[in-house]
Image 1: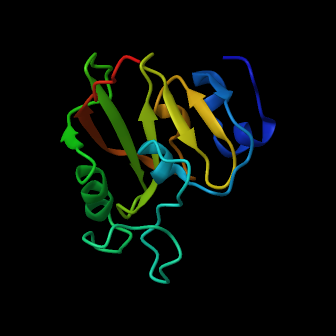
Image 2 (image 1 turned 120 degrees about the vertical axis):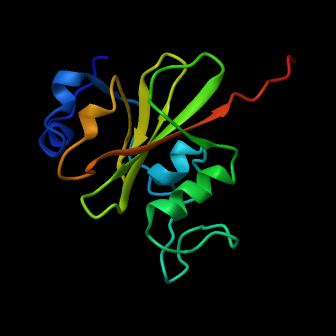
Length: 153
């Protein structure tokens, strides 16, 4: 990974040592919660003003349970760790000291992780620890689902 961004390194000081690569330009159409679910068209947000997209059958609240329910509605279940498993896709949810979700990242087939940084860029990072700290808190929950089979064309 070779693309560096001094601004990101200032916000996430651990990321420089952990390794990362900027993989997209700024795009305000989607956020980390949507990106983790492989959606780059919607902004997933349980906001009380109903500005962001949020499924109607899931509590519209900033809680870890609401975010877990969002991903469970997409086929994910809580698992023990973020280690790469051949036939599974994984999502990590970062929480602050009050257990409020701050960020989500998705594991890639390589074992690295991909994150959308708010309205900013997408990055690929080698570890989950690189984004831990005051901005996103720490990884609180890992979820996984079986990889979907793709049809050969």
